[in-house]
Each structure stands twice: as C-alpha cells, then as structure tokens.
Length: 237
Image (cartoon, rainbow, N blue to C red; front, side, top):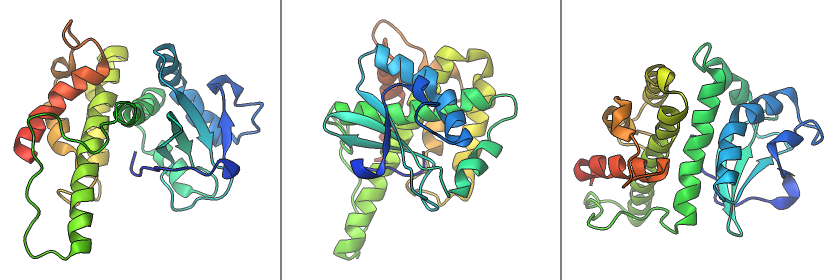
C-alpha cells in the first residue's frame, strides 16, 4: 500500500496463475499467508474480468513495500516483496486482532483500485471539471516535478483507500468500523501532512459506510469510490 511499482522484471519474479497454486510455487509460509488473505479479492477481480496476476519477488527486498502494484502489457501485477523484508511480518503484527484476513482483503482491494485506474488509462489524471492546484512559487524544476508527483500519488492513494473501504462495506459490513479505524491509524502513523500517503481527508468522508453504498447509478465499488473521491478533491485541488 505504501509504494507503487510501475514496471517489473519478469526474470526476477515468480508469477502465480492462480492464488490456489501457492504450495506448488514453493512459497514461504509468510507468502502463503498473504496470498491466502488476498484470495477472495483476487478471485472476484478475475470473475469480473480484470486482468490480474500475483507476482512474488524471490530475491531479498528489505526496503520494498510488502505489497505493491505493477502494470505491464495490459495486466495488473500484485507484487509481494516479503523475502528478507522485515516489514512483511511487521505489517501482519499491526493488523487488527481477529480481523487479519479481512485487513489483507482490504489491502488487496486497495491495489485493485490502482489497477482499475491503470486499466481506464486514468492514472494520475483528474476527473473532468477539476484542475490541479497551483505549484508553490520558488521551487526548482526538480522540486516542482517532485511536488506534482506527490500530489498525484496522494490522489491515487486516496482513491485506492476508498475502493478498499467500498470492498469492506460490501463484504464485511459488521466489521467496517474496526477496519476503517485501523486503516486511519495506519495512515496517521509517522504522517507528514500532505505527503504521498496522507489520505486522511478521504478516510474522514468514508467514516460512515453508507457514503460508499452502491446504487443503480454506481453499481460497482470503483464507481462508488469515485463519487466520494471527487468530494475530497473539491477542497484538495
């Protein structure tokens, strides 16, 4: 959830055609646990026709995000980087007790939000009717590019969080409040306001799961999330 991979090296990855193939792929117990938790989301994505694969990085990746998304050749890649990476186990220990499986689903659904944006050709794009906020004056060209990238990434992370919560509202409504509180605490941990993963403005709008309810006009978790996402953009941009 904290880092996006835009490209992948096929030679340095184990590609799983199906989540059920964890044993045959020679995965570690930690990798099997993550994939088992994400499986309901992956199966729904494939049922809906989304081109999604799971990629397990076999080399040590101590500084990588445990879970990230890549996009290659029109397919989304959910990338697990758990070997030699203490954050993989640490993330699991921070999951809400008794809700570990549901929290892993939420994390996978967040990455599906990124996948949807890539498939729609909308990555880093603002919805119609919105214009990006002005870049602060006096920045060098490098800082200007970094600022724009940070703002764009923050918007995409906000959308991903709303998709994740829309999934939770549909699949685990009785546990929504606990999972929303956990996600909010994760986003507030070591927070630098306005930075890439400061999605608290969107999370505040989604405190009530009814805000993400699907209707005939917004039949999917993606369109339900998009409607709420635009509300925060009103003040953010």
